[in-house]
Length: 210
Image (cartoon, rainbow, N blue to C red):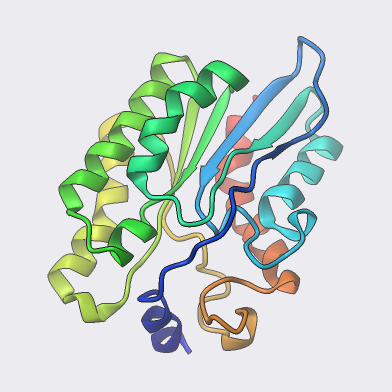
């Protein structure tokens, strides 16, 4: 149930960094760089089962000349992403940056203003490097209070509007009502629903692959 899943967000997630890329591309190949947390790092699954890897496979078959680099880290906060973004941009020279961060900020009770500033820094760095941006939003448990819950969700919309970037409001929108879609931790998706996450992201990402 949705309420059950939301309450499960109160449990932090820790795992090793998950960073992967396809083999070195030709100089003409353009890169989609994904910087996210455990939901993008395929926590608890084989890396090939995660939505990022599945998106990479779709891009390989439908968008010649593109590759995907997954620089997501389980447990990552927006501060971690902001600290790493310059290095990742210099390393990978992406044409598109996908940002899926913020949930762990809420789990740890970090200030909303700090999260927004960190995400703004990441978006600004990407735009300064002439990369398009897809911002992927999350939702948080209602026990944080209606004001905080609304402000958290609205932060993504405000940032997308401010920087004029693409927005997917909620990564888990297509699965959140299905308890069976989640692992025993009641937070991370099981393998069979990862294609649904790929399909949820695709309409927002595909227009950027031009």
